[in-house]
Amino acid sequence: MWEVLFLVKEITIRDLYAILDIETTGGKYNEEGITEIAIYKHDGREVVDQFISLVNPERPIQEFVVGLTGINNAMLRNAPKFYEVAKRIVEITQDCTIVAHNAKFDYRILQLEFDRLGFDFESNTICTVELSKKLIPNVPSYSLGKLVKTLGIPITNRHRASGDAMATVKLFDLLLQKDDSKEIITNSIRKTPKRHLDKKLLKILETLPTDTGVYYFHNEKGDIIYIGKSKNIKKRINQHFTNESKKAKQMQREVNEITYELTGNDLIAMLKESNEIKKNKPIYNRALKRDAFTYALKLDKNQEGYFTLEIVMSTKAEEPLTAFTNMRQAKKFVENLADEYGLCLKLCHLQKTKSACFHYNIKLCEGACIQEETAESYNQRVEKVIEKYSYLNKNLVLIGRGRKNGEKSILLIENGTFQGYGFFELNHQINDVERLKHHITPMHEDRDTKHIILGYMQRKQNLQIKEF
Image 1: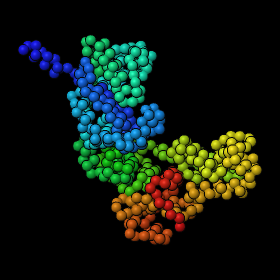
Image 2 (image 1 turned 60 degrees about the vertical axis):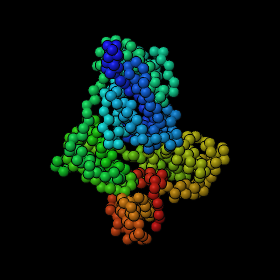
Image 3 (image 1 turned 135 degrees about the vertical axis):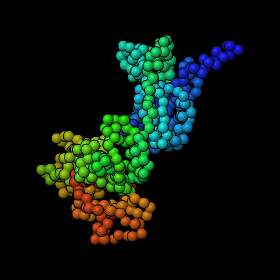
Image 4 (image 1 turned 90 degrees about the horizontal axis):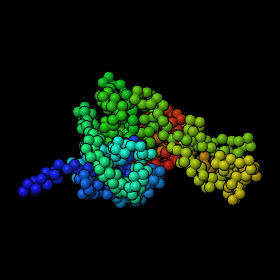
């Protein structure tokens, strides 16, 4: 009888650990999504339960992450979404201390996903990086791959959740053995304070929509202290309210009210956010908010009269043909233009050479690079590019999604200059410019608005473009 009681006591006081690894989409801080998760429940001696699953993050995976993990968007198309596995994660981690290699990252991602569901997920954590530095000093590297190799711990499926989590299990077993007194284990448990939103912030959050638009943080005086935009205003502001950075905490203390304006689509939201930040200069927005379209395609003419195309920083293109978010996207776009329209690589600034370009040697360039083709003939093909991708000297209406069912948004471009935006009902057809102008809220065109519009036109993101 005493023996049975002793065994029961031993089992009940044994610590439980949820040793896990998470793979994500990558991307901006607090906008990542889980693509794979592996959890091994450990009772201090052995693994007693496990959960491994791919997860559909409902957002694209960064290319460098695909190269690192081998997990791509196609693999996750039919995988369960996070809300479908959330219950199982709660069950397997209940009453456990979360253990991970760089636990701060994995725990943040887990909390982020639960925050999106409106669930308050809390746990103590142990970081095996910090613990290894205490118990296994003087190792060349504490990255998981190099550390387990140094210790002779086998690892398979590197950079996949199950492989990295199992390697962490074996590492944690070793750390438990080395810490006989359990003092370091106890001291390494990071106590996570309960994160309850201030009642004021909760009350504000309850009033917000889940639609696309621009939002404004106001202080007690009513002054605008921050302006942002989002495809889901409530979700984005919840991220502001749960962010623990110094700037975010200061904003949380100062915000007294949030107002917003729905825009129906992200294009108008970006334009309005850019315009409003410059006009109001809120103290918590950077003075010069980084342009989402960093690069632009510049059109010029050389001394011989040939049109040239060049990728430049967006700040150096007064009249860009189109705009791009990164250099890779820009270079790929110009390479495709050169192939499609038979353009010279030298005149597109894709190849530096004093002689003929590579395209000439494979019969794709007609010799503009060595003046074998006339400038007039070559420029006609470049003009086709200008016609297709630019709104220079054009009269256009860009039609997109509205703020509600039965409504469309419009952007008016007249004589190559952006005039403003507006909304109209589907059953109210607008066929002439003068009637159209009555629906327009004027907006000043500057370099940033031009890049935003050109970038969207190039990608044709749910835009219908009509010329008049």
